[in-house]
Length: 295
Image (cartoon, rainbow, N blue to C red; front, side):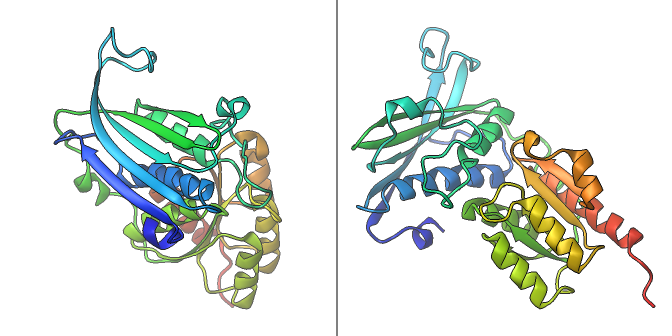
C-alpha cells in the first residue's frame, strides 16, 4: 500500500531484529499508526525524494536504562522506528507536533490530527511515541509497545462476535490514511464502503444519487467544509439518513449540538474496531426505526 501511495523518488527499506516478540493490539490500530507515520515521512521527502526506513527491534526498558521513556513501565518492548531524510522539523516545533491541530503542512494539505491520533492509540496500548529531528537531515519517530508473553484469549474469535452488516456506507476524511483505515475496518465487518477525502466531492457524489448510501461516516475537521456543515447539507437533501461524525478534539463539536443537528452519533478518535462496529450498527438500526414508512 505504501509503494502505491509514495512517489518513485522515495525508496522504502525495512529491517526487523525483533525475533518473535509479540504485542497485543487490533491490527488495524497498528496499521493506522504505521500509515500515519509513513505518510508524514513521504510528505517530508515529496520535493527531493529520499529513503523511508521502517525498522522493528526489541528493547528492554529496565529501571536504570529507560531514562528516555521514564513514564513507561520497565520491561520488554517492541520499538518501531520510522525514519526519513527529508526537510526535518525545526526545534521550536518538535515539542508541539503531537498537539491536536498543529501542522507544518500548507493550508488544505492536512488537519494536524494524524500524530495526535497516533499518540492516542499508543497511549491506549500503554505505549508511547517520541521524535528526533534535525533540519535539513530528516526525522525519526520511535514507537514503543509493551510485549506480551502470550496472546490473550480474545482476538479473532472476539472479532466474529462484533455487530456486522451489509449496508452501503460513505466514508469522508481528508486524511487519506485515516479514510483508508475506516474503509478497511468497515469492510472487515461486511459493509460496502466508498471513501472520499474531500467533503465537497463527497457532497457532489451524494447529490448525484441520494439513495445510494445507507449511512455516512465523516470526519469533523476538514478544509473547505467541516463535518457538521457537510452533515447539514446532506440532511437537507435526505433528512433521515444516519450520519456519524468522528472527531479528535471534543471542543470542536459537542454531542448535544450534534444530536440537535440530526446526527446519529458523535465518536472520538482513535476508533477501535469494537467501537466502530457498535456505533455504526446502532446508527443504522436507529435510523431504520425512525425512518418514515414508505407510502
